[in-house]
Length: 282
Image 1 (cartoon, rainbow, N blue to C red):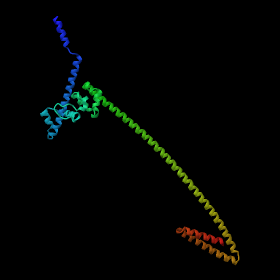
Image 2: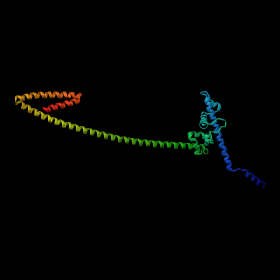
Image 3: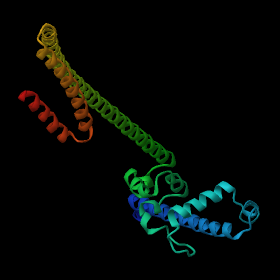
Image 4: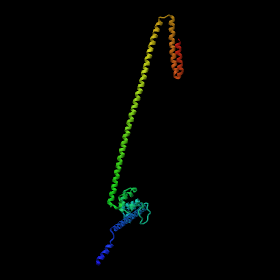
């Protein structure tokens, strides 16, 4: 009977497994936060030490004084630079309050998250539940993110390339159309100019033909008149002599009028009209 009572007391003293689990998880989070916070504080002091040491003594100091490798020191300084550079320095300080979803991560996870840009890191850690992932799982999530970004960038590059190709084709089509239209307009203008020139040539040829015909008729009339004058009376012969002289004078007057026309077209027109009027009055 006594043994049964002891067992009941022992059973009553056993706590709920959920409570125990919650306490362990809480201690783990606190431990991770402390480890990360102290890692950041070490990184802060490493940055300070590196700035204070003379050039060339950094590597030896790490090895002899704090027993850190170069890579470990770099990681610690990166943690400070990314997570704690805005946090006031004091022993046992917590991580930057702007990174609460990262504060409970262990040192290795915090280092892995440095592969994510600082402006996206907090949201990414919260989205994937970084605290509940293993280091391997978190690494896979980061790699998957990088792969998706590369695929998105590739798709964007393809879209841009296709857009540029389409735009170039459209520009080329516009250029071809404009070139064809310009060529057509030029051809039409040339044809129009040629037609106009042809008309002018035909008109000039017609005038030249009429002038030649008039000249031929005048020559024939003159020859006929000269023939008649040869067989005419002395009065007619005298008339012929005066007529020939007047023709020569008229020719000289016409030459003078053309010379005057070069500098004074208006006066030349008046003189030409007067000469014609004089000829018509005879």
